Length: 189
Image (cartoon, rainbow, N blue to C red):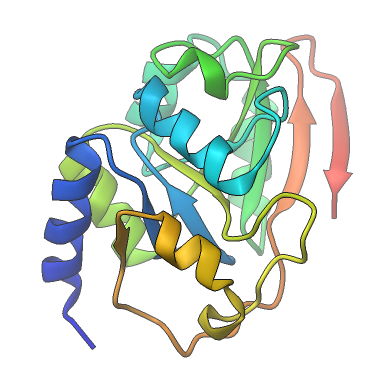
């Protein structure tokens, strides 16, 4: 098992050159790239065999990054994040400063603040949000362990992070859609 700083360095080098990585998140294993790089985002859609009208989420490591992407964030968003006992993805209106092909047709973007050390440190180094989508071909079951990830996905990425390969993921994140007019809709509990 490699150390976290080495893995952050290796992943960063791949991402800064437009590559895609397979990495552990605070929920399930994810496929990721620089959320501002449209070509890298397209590589993930192609690998997942996913229609690009189905947007993916991005991970962020703090308030500063959130405000760089969203000019307005409903107050209730911070309350939900403070009160959540498990990882929570918020779908928010009118993102900016990210790749156009990651924004949903209704001009929203799903975001999750992470505490997981690898993801947090990688974004500190990138100074940009990180795409996160489950490590499976679209329509297939989301793998709960590294061993369940298909060879097709492993071979299709530019780098596989060598951390937490024995971790078992219980659940993906809760997903809550918040609109600027303070409507709240739970998409996944």
